[in-house]
Amino acid sequence: MNLSRRGLLASSLALAACDRRLDTSTAQAAPTRPVRPLRDLAPFPFGTQLISTELATPVIAQLAGRHFDQVNTGFELKMEYIVQPDGRLRFEGGDRLATFCRDHDQALHAHTLIWYADTPAWFERLDGSRRAMEAAFDGYIREVAGRYAGRARAWDVVNEPVTDEGSSLRDSLWSRNLGQDGHFIRAFELAHEADPAAILFTNDYNLESNPTKRRTFLHLVERMMTRGVPIGGIGTQCHVSVDLPRGALTTAMRDIASLGLPVHVSEFDCSLVPDGAFSGSTSDREAAQIRLYQEAIESFAALPSRQQYGFTVWGVRDTESWLRRTDWGGDPNDRPLLFDDAGRPKPVFWAVAEALERSSRD
Image (cartoon, rainbow, N blue to C red; front, side, top):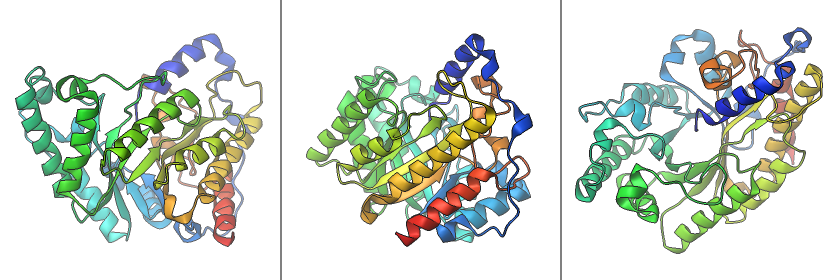
């Protein structure tokens, strides 16, 4: 996930439309009823994102273990966490999450090996030296993917390969030194070598709201498939806002599935702060949020079962959501997730539970 992209947008929009800040006074109260684990209702893997330090908060650990059967590792299997200034690698966070998953009968979705925005200083010093970069790149993937072989169900191998505007692939430290296609192919082949059983994904955002980006992304995947690259699935992050038009998620899901690969809704959340103009009240925003969660689940459930890799919500409680980070331009009152600050299920939780139940019956 590109952590600054929505923040930059949100901060600029806030200057132009301060009245779009959330009014929390009309927030809906969640009904009182028995809470069944979402993982028991879903006909496909239903996951969340965790950071290992969050497990020290009992309510987060309890909710994560009870309601989800797959965990996305957030940032603790990214280079930014793993690679130290002297080139040594640390795995404490990833190992803690792997243990949590083992103890709660959950799958581990490892995120991510190569990301254009994640270029530790230890790698940057190799810029311009192809042979040294190849050796370091290869060694890193072999060691990291190999460490979790047998523990990770899947890897996001190359994260966010397409530019924001969507018409081209990103330039990066990796593409400059190993080639635009070359670094992509090399990463997948090495990850497959290190863990032949893992499902290997490429993952991107705004695929549901930017058709140009979606086409570029799918053309990349199709081209790599024809070259025999071991891509095992497509991840669509689905960070959406309440003003996303009705049907956009359904259209995107259909397009993404057209290549026949397993699909992962990999980082779903729904901000109550619109990306553009939205004249509705707080209750209108909450209703739109419910609609978008339901549309996402229903369009995913409509895929052939062999393509339903999993549906992941990007966090457990609103408190920990990245969309509340004011240093990234977020709104501290945003409520994009299924559980409130105290860990209580919100109205959107019950809507998701009903959508999962319907999907199980269909």
